[in-house]
Image (cartoon, rainbow, N blue to C red; front, side):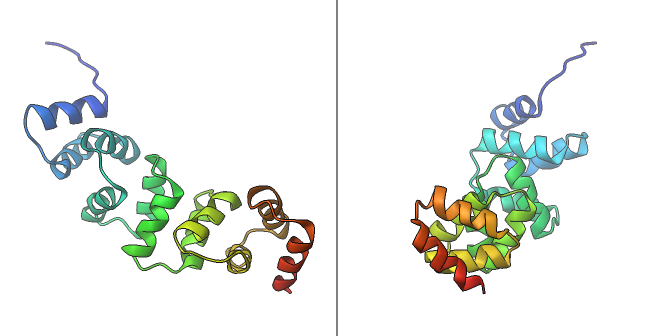
Length: 164
């Protein structure tokens, strides 16, 4: 008898290439055999080249809540912008709700700004208010305005006034 230690990705690759198993079938197999969700999802992402929407659908089949889906997708190295796109387009999350969730998953103020700018098409004044309402500190917001968005001091002062 052989004692073979295969990674989740190796197992997924064999199940796909030799046994023609679908991503959903491989997910079930890996989870039933004790593979942690984060390892399983990383393997499935790599082997099946899943988009964030396809990966989310697999997690939804497991009855995961949106917060857990977002967390697992981030752990599987989907970007904050990819997850935000999913939150917006699939789960109908507002900009503020999406950023609050991403902040709880350790999204920096810079990453949250990119989400608001690129996924939600917010203007800089809207970004400032949304970041603040999502719980980012004034110092974090100032840092984003100065170093990430490269705004001048007077522009930053005018924008911070929006926060009251």
